[in-house]
Image (cartoon, rainbow, N blue to C red; front, side, top):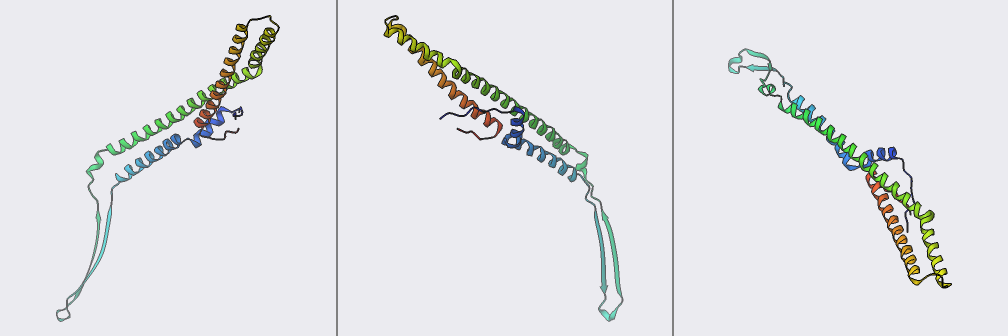
Length: 199
């Protein structure tokens, strides 16, 4: 059973791969994690202000003494010496730039993989067409001609055997090319992150 020859558009495959390939999706989420880490690092540097309001009533129970009400208010401003050190924010910024570079690298790697797989697949399709449109038929006709000539006594058995060997070699190369084309199709679809091979 042979795979049917297919035609692809490289830009469509790259777009599909951008949505389906796990390595690119992981690189995208790594970028998001780095962005959120930076926001967290910046928020941790904010000063935590504290407001305190209070009311206190006290009654003296001895001889029904006077009652007293006290109101309190306060602001707490912590002294954060860690704000002088910006290492955590710088680390988060470096992680963002690193994750962006890794994402671009993954995109470029996918484009290279798809382009190479596409070129290999197209080259093997051309080879199969070359066999289908002449090479196999030519080898078959040469073999038939040598057998016919041998039966009439015009050629030697060695020439017939040589023609048969050539025909067998051409057939073997044809089947190897068919196999390699099928492998190239699988590799192309794997590079694009799809699977819709038809027989």
